[in-house]
Length: 192
Image (cartoon, rainbow, N blue to C red; front, top):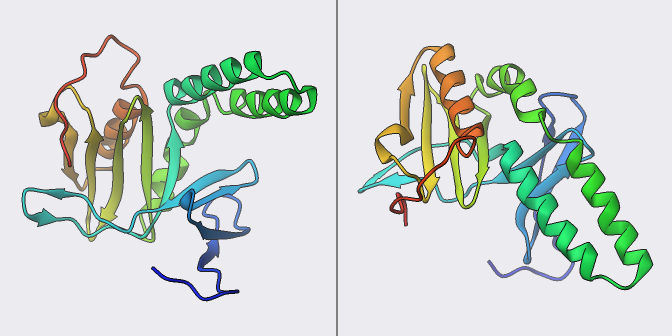
């Protein structure tokens, strides 16, 4: 989308957990993302998921929920970057980032109930980042929770959920948070 000078596209809303203002600003290098001061991260999904020719209607704003595996992957990447960095000021910034990420380990499982409550109204969805290009989207559509996996998933049959039961939705979210806890074989790509 072409932009005029001085025009900064953004989406503003209240955080469903801390109820403070959040602004998601579009940046060419990152897309639509927002890191909300140690509370939650958000992203915008403009292209809804599809299966065959069926397109799903989703909320625009998704709460990013990183699985421990995904957080550890990011930490490992930063540690190798820090090991190669010779500039002490840059290394200290990387170390601070590592400490911030380490504090996120265990966060996803602790917040599942609160986040399911937050998506019940339909304004937000959950984007679960399992790691290694695997994850799932979960949202409330009318009276049902909908869940759909994305990326290189091992078993595509387990990648869909339509339920009115919150316990089933919680189980689906936990399954994708724990996706890499056991040994997994990377299967075919579900979405292109």
